[in-house]
Image 1 (cartoon, helix red, strand yellow):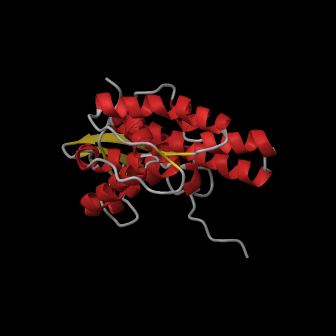
Image 2: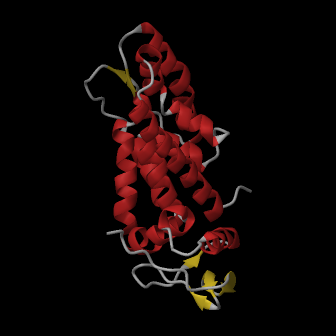
Length: 239
């Protein structure tokens, strides 16, 4: 038996500007979130992107084809009610950031990590005033408390929509610094940042070849990473 899917019941999706934000309307009726909250978005660009997703639905509603709508629902229903907790969860990545954990061998991998990640550490030190300490091997390294506090403050300053995007950028890359670099558009294009988060995996592929299943998972994670940046741009377009 196939799973039930809601049918398309509207003819047209549109955008309406209100005092509280931009609404998406289906035949003039405002969309609501799964938790029945008002689906109000911070920018017209985001609302238009969400409306385009609704318009693109055919006979059945396919949520997996609606990434902007799903991310906005998450921002409104899940992130906003527990914004401080989400910010703390994201900031905690700074304590064990991917780019601080280095191999001690082989020399080629050590060199690749340094070439990719040292400039990001330099950026965190100079632009975020948050120097972090790289370490080799399995033993953890305590990071400077002042640096962690500055990184946490930067995360906590984001609104629910930016925080939703930042959560995915950080969780998918394993790096708070990479997530904040995406937030600040410090490395462009965004695909380059994703590649920087994959240094270890790329090296493994070079040694042992590509595993089809792992490649499929990596492609899905890359797509989600790029979508998170798109959502961030829709929430706060570059100046």
